[in-house]
Image 1 (cartoon, rainbow, N blue to C red):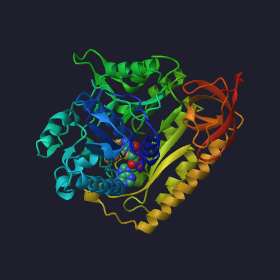
Image 2 (cartoon, protein in one colour):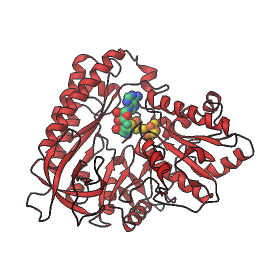
Image 3 (cartoon, rainbow, N blue to C red):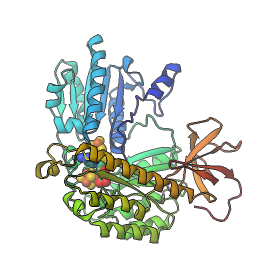
Image 4 (cartoon, helix red, strand yellow):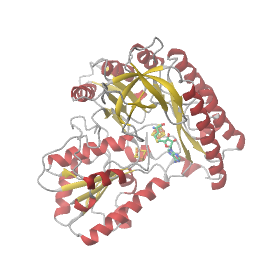
Amino acid sequence: MYDEQNLLLGSKKEIDEAKQGEVLFYDQPQTNGRKFYIESYGCAMNFSDSEIVASILADEGYGPTREMESADLILVNTCSIREKAEETVRNRLKVFNQLKYKKPDLQIGVLGCMAERLKAKLMEQEKLVDLVVGPDAYRDLPNLLAKVDEGEKGINVLLSREETYADISPLRLESNGIVGFISIMRGCDNMCSFCVVPFTRGRERSRDTYSIIAEATDLYQRGFRDITLLGQNVDSYKWQSPDGAESVNFAELLDRVAAIHPDLRIRFSTSHPKDITDEVLHTMARHENICKYIHLPVQSGNSRILQLMNRTYDREWYMNRVDAIYRILPDCAISSDMIAGFCSETEEEHEDTLSMIQYAKYSMSYMFMYSERPGTPAAKKFVDDVPEEVKKRRLQEIVDAQMNMSLKVNLQDVGKVMKVLIEGDSKRSDQEFKGRTSQNKMVNFPKDGNCQPSQYVHVKITDASSGSLRGIIIHTPETETH
Ligand code: SAH
Ligand code: SF4
Ligand code: F3S
């Protein structure tokens, strides 16, 4: 659920498109002439937060722009998960700072996890940063911006036990109007030893169920057809009404969101292997529109390493969860996150991660080399002793094994007829559509006169690679649909 290379508003392709002509944002607010430009890094939660920030700024009269040169305010929503993520941001700040030399009135702000991790230090290290705002302090932006207008620095990195931004309606910017994301909780209480998130995002808290349902209903009514419920550990979602009379867990939340409309597809991320219950799996089985796809990061396939990581499950427990998923949801796809070369990992322990790919038959995975993060339990207690070359080689072995597995599971789809939600033109050709299956696999297929984005079509799969499927639209659905 994260991609360090992704930018919300500033990707090269989008900037080029913007220069070719006026490209409207999905939501186009009224402005007072001041413009903000925002880039986002890290996980989907950060991208979702940028839409909340955009909404708060729009209320202040700021309009979005895709061209940083025309912005009065440049914001970068940052990620601290690995060292590389922070390096990327520092490089971007250099680029923004060059602009500020030319245009001294330009205001530059750092938001998100790096703001939280480094706090005021960030302003010392990056001299031209005017604004540092942590993930729970976005409501304070108008006040902080007013300070910056007066020539002061603006900083607020207070974490909160309550903030969920439940009442803020996110401004959908880079949206295609079909696929949307809804934050259902914030923070994380798990303390996996390698992870910086509990420090940058604070304590776990769940958002008001009714505000989630209202946001999902609004998206459905505006034409959205595929929404993902976001949290670092969605299975521990638990909301209680203020009077204590009502308590809603994740399975119940899923049930209610799925009931909004059968044509609204529901996805969620991320599931924690220790918390995903059979109740959730049975709820998924009951609703055709809850997508049969679970992102269930294993991190390591070895029990000793899992214990050092403080993941609170072992290899057997994880395998048991995988068995339960395939038993209750036979057509479900599972994906994972894996870390190569965690502290003291031996060759045999690494092999356990490789064999887990075979066991769980992941359709895809996000794979990383361990990157020590200052202040985390692992940084305090363990030595980052697996040499860089060994980490690299192990990561490559994991990537190779996963690529083979992805190809294998995708080839099993050839010949099946799958229900696909059309999302738009395929990357390669405007003669083709792309869309996703319930299992979150991308399918490319030739256009058909009658079909439009946001419609569901049945596609017969004719070919597969490790990254996507190919097919043709079938007008009379065949019996075997998935
Ligand atoms: N809440 C999610 C993950 C959020 S972070 C979960 O528990 O699965 C996303 C992924 O980044 C993690 O799953 C992990 O694989 C990876 N990651 C986190 N910290 C890391 C570190 N210090 N070095 C390398 N990868 C890390
Ligand atoms: Fe980090 Fe673990 Fe929380 Fe995921 S569950 S965000 S890996 S501490
Ligand atoms: Fe997400 Fe990165 Fe923060 S993964 S929670 S943006 S550290």
